[in-house]
Length: 83
Image (tube, rainbow, N blue to C red; front, side, top):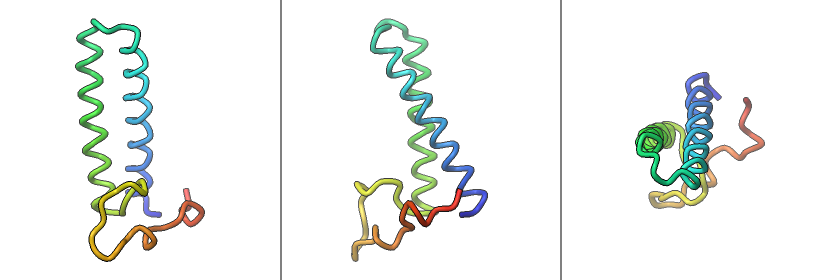
């Protein structure tokens, strides 16, 4: 795993955490417009970083569109990734 791939994975993890925390907060603070704007901002950032990662290194999840032939088995298995 390259430094750039690891950097993107860490950024994805941080953004996933942030989006989840905002979602949990918004569950109990429905009228907090500023929090909703932050949630939308970080959700968009997460979407962009995931797309960048997947374009460079392959799918993050098995439920990902594939070209023909089926490509998922060609990506590294979890135990093959070195952190």
